[in-house]
Image (cartoon, rainbow, N blue to C red; front, side, top):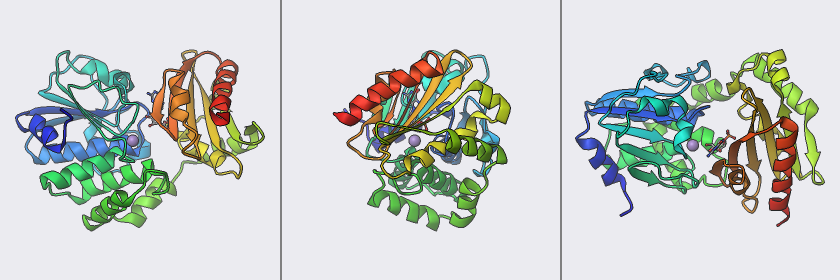
Length: 323
Ligand code: 5GP
Ligand code: MN
């Protein structure tokens, strides 16, 4: 039977120790959802531990109560229930994965259509544009009081994953959630300033480079940008700095898909792909490279050099655009 919100409440009802975590390279949906859910579980009297592989990075210090998210220990921990949020495949939990003792029941709550149902209970709603929206609707269902701190985390989660309420999937439910969250105490202008108008100068230097070196293929339908390890070193950029740079490429008239290739230290390349039109499914393309995500925003980590991965991926993307 497909689980519903009552199933989630039931799974958590008798649990005393609960772990919560989300994916590597977290965005505000991953961390905001983790924090909001952990805060609610604490209100319910649970003993809660919140992890992320990177802990709470400085970029997200605007999220209220961000300090409850810590890096996972190296030894496995036992929990009555472990909750994975916004995580499509188990290995995207990164080192958190090793901190969960084998046999721990996993509750998997996510909105990725590519979710592999790795939990013991899997609540997957691909119609929700953010995991934060699922959690908001769950809190409403169980009649939870949403504190200003929880509301701000959920609003940040939804704002990020909808591209500030613009992407496909942003619907009446989304604006209704946002409206309710504002009523619960979100200061929209202060939060937006922290999220969108407080970028580190490093990121600006990366953007400057991206704009200078962007390439256009397929008669301008595909825009790409590559980031080599050498450039990371030179500009002193952190992994968190490149989120959102790709949106500048997609925003160009005539561009139908944008791809960002980032060289990683282990002989791998991180691919981040975005589509502008629902008919172009970048998740399908990323799956060919063992990645996943959403139809219009997806990614993969691919073995190989920057040049090779770029060539292989662009060929597959070109096929998707033409068919
Ligand atoms: P981003 O490009 O911002 O890193 O990720 C876009 C979307 O694709 C996110 O929903 C993210 O979870 C998913 N994604 C990114 N990289 C991977 C990957 O290597 N594997 C899978 N399964 N999903 C990914
Ligand atoms: Mn998400």
